[in-house]
Amino acid sequence: MCDKLMQKEAVSIFSGDSYKTPKSTKRFLFDRLLFGSRWAFYIKNFIVYYRTGQCGKKGKLDTVAQAYYSRQNMKVAEGCGARISVSGMNNIDKVEGPVVFIGNHMSLLETAVMSSFISCRKPAIFVVKEKLFNIPFFGNIMRGMGNIGVARENPREDFKKVISEGKKKLEAGESIIIYPQSTRSAQFDPSQFNSIGVKLAKGAGVPVIPVALKTDFLENGKKFKDLGPINKDKEVHFEFAEAIEVTGNGKEAQNTIVEFITSRLEKWGK
Image: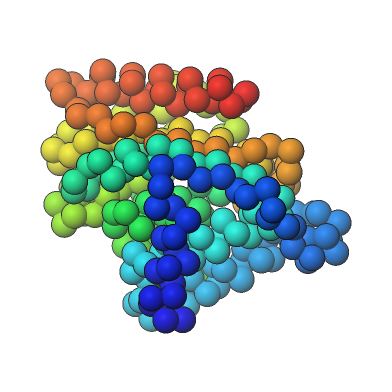
């Protein structure tokens, strides 16, 4: 697809401070034919991942392509009944240069759609599970984006890697999206929300933008975590707070992030 068309598709609806799924959005016929089951979502989502992976394999997964394909993931969710609300995007525009985005981690959905409204503003990469680099198509996406992979087996080694590679990415002008929880969970537990993102930002001398999200539209599966059910009754929310400068030992910034996420989840009824 022509880069100009991709850019128009990726950027046009996210040029303002907020976004809401239009009321006129219709469910996919495929979703209706499968009686609204999870499989319509996963099949369509896999097609997008395949195309994104092919783009990454060719070395063409730049910020425009990332925003475009992430937007396609968002369309899949909306076509399968998701109602998505995004706010605070102007807070991203207010900061010149790279930042560290720090948010809670609820499902696979946030990683799939976050680039929709970030990559059209700032080049950004994720800190992800290292195992994703070994999965067909996903591995091409991870490498194509230049994401940082962590094993989640040795916290000390993961910390060193994130700080070392993350600092290089930030110095090169790339922002970093990090979920400091040990694993994704429908419930937010501040005790499991470590301060690695704050420490990375402080070490690199860049600000932090807190991100609160509610994505339990896509639930974690009991037997297969990545193939959980979808709940069309649960609205999807993303909100970006104003940037925070990390000072001192970073505890104040960490507490501010936790308070922001907690307050928004309470507001959204989670």
